[in-house]
Length: 239
Image (cartoon, rainbow, N blue to C red; front, side, top):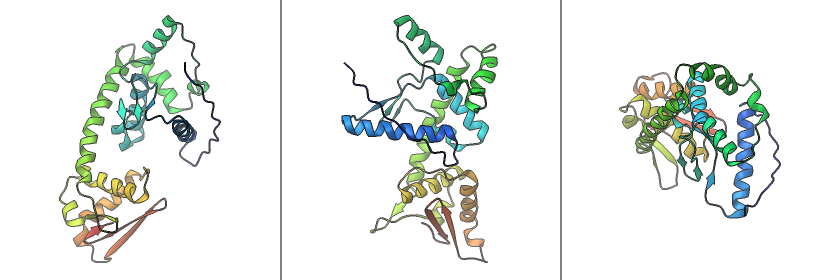
């Protein structure tokens, strides 16, 4: 027997878009139910089609987050269907007699994700039937590479006896750009205590200041505010 929980949510669009706001509200509700049931894992139904759409959408938007698209296992989240297309899942559900509901938003072609699904992938499939699985596989490989870079980037962040995080500018500036950019974001997240969207342009501005730290004669220190978190940069440390 399976228990069914119904949780009503209030979706507040804070400027990131209705899809993102709805996703946050949905996950908050699921986390609440996990606490009630003492669950340690959350199984999601994302398919290879979802991974491919999200990966392509983030590439189009120029988002570095494209490399972190929907892994099969991500801490408490499990996605057992990320190697299977949406079409295959639907066919299996029909054969097994399972009833399912389609989200009405999946018909709104004003949303980029739906446009990609209905207009772009439908055309690509006429040439390459397994296009979704191929892009999904590329996304998973990119995720593995990104995780390796994330782990390396964390090695350049330290903390003092008071738990304050910092990174040495002299050491950081010797690293490849991909490492420095990630270290900036990770440092921000450690200081804020949550994952935040830093924006590529903001990280790039800090990156350029780090690279030119010893050449900045007009000003000895810089301050960057992202949301409620502030980063300080001088010739010695990013903190």
